[in-house]
Image 1: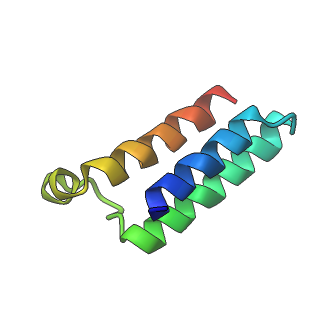
Image 2 (image 1 turned 90 degrees about the vertical axis):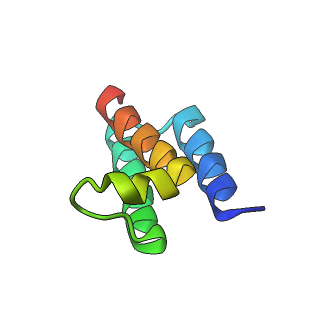
Length: 70
């Protein structure tokens, strides 16, 4: 299983859990930090990097958007 698939699975587990919204937010933030380190996501938007790493940035943005809804 690829690392992105593992992250997707973790995401689904977090969102499907009965933990509080605060806890979900903390877990999602932690997952985002892991992605930043593991995939070396640039702090400043970099179109070239994003073009080369479409699946990574899509997952990262999914996590970010989900944090806004919990």
